[in-house]
View 1 (spheres, rainbow, N blue to C red):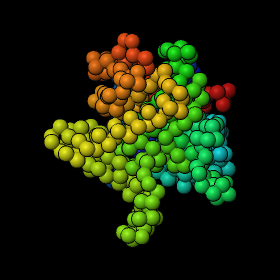
View 2: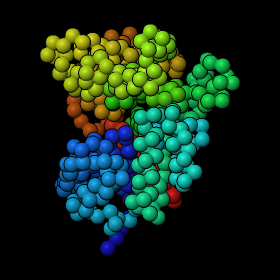
View 3: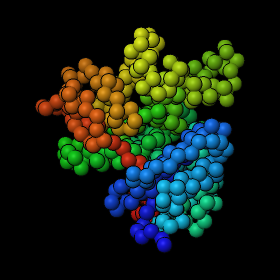
View 4: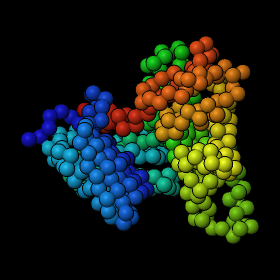
Amino acid sequence: MTESGHLVLVVNSGSSSMKYQLVDPAAGTAVASGLIERVGSADGSARHTDGDRTAEFAGAISDHGVALRIMQDLFAQAGRPLDTVDLLGIGHRVVNGGSRYGEPTLVDSHVLAVIRELSPLAPLHNPANATGIEQAQLAFPGVPQVAVFDTAFFRDLPAAAATYAIDRAVAADYRIRRYGAHGTSHQYVSQQVTALLGAQASARQIVLHLGNGASASAIRDGHAVETSMGLTPLEGLVMGTRSGDIDPAVVFHLTRVAGMGIDAIDELLNRRSGMRGLTGFNDLRDVHQAAANGDAQAALALEVYCHRIRKYVGAYMAVLGGVDAITFTAGVGENDAVTRATALGGLEGLGIVLDAERNAVRSREARVISADGSPVTVLVVPTNEELAIARATVALLT
């Protein structure tokens, strides 16, 4: 018997992982969820949760097609086979839609080809996103597949923010502009802040999405006016494995002096930089532990990480002409009180005053962590990209 109700399966395919949730968009809840890790290796793993039921897998996961079959098996093991679920559609996170796609889009062969064509703009993400969609089409024939683009929220950035100061003909020919990323998260979180505080108290927002990938945005009256990621997700804040902002001449220097090729430099800046490059760890929890154990390089890396955040906060306050609310979200932003305190420490003169006790609280709820009377409200708001993707999928298909 088919389960009643219109549910959306949300799939987020990474280069070596696949996250998924079965979402009830109307209720705003995840019915089931899972994470499949180390796709492409012989020692992959997966964990699935459905209420109080769990299912796990350990073994070889050769590709995303195998990962999807494992996902289906885990649903069945937990007592909810997907062929008994009334799926309205499958929503996919796609990092870069370029200038082609700004709205959620029903995927056909042409759309899939364009997503692959745009891979140079998100080399760590778009290829995996496309593969996930392709495999889902094979696994769920007849179920609509919808692409929701991370760049959509930043598609209408002011020209002054989106434009790079290079030869305009070259920029036009090769689609060079600031696209941003994490837009689904930035939009969702900023809307939650407005719901919590009211439109007037949240007119000028800075959102800090801090995870293995990290980005900042400046938002005025619900519209993005700046963001830290650029042509690709490499620009901006320091990240788990990505450098963030760097002098472009570093590329020339490494080519001429070190004899490194473009692919080697791409690998260096995207996969061997950021916290991993500075410390050997890409997980900030490991970096904190190393610093606590007296590792001077780890301590410096944390200073670099927080310094970059603080610099963007100051810059975006200038862009907005002041700020009403600053919000932390994503894995680090939601859970790392030390990083939040360090990143905003010393900014009392700018009206940013944290309450130490509120900041130290661990919670999955949206909450204010600034002190009473702080001119700027500082919040922690858990992101929910899966719910946003599910609702976007419903809006398109119904």
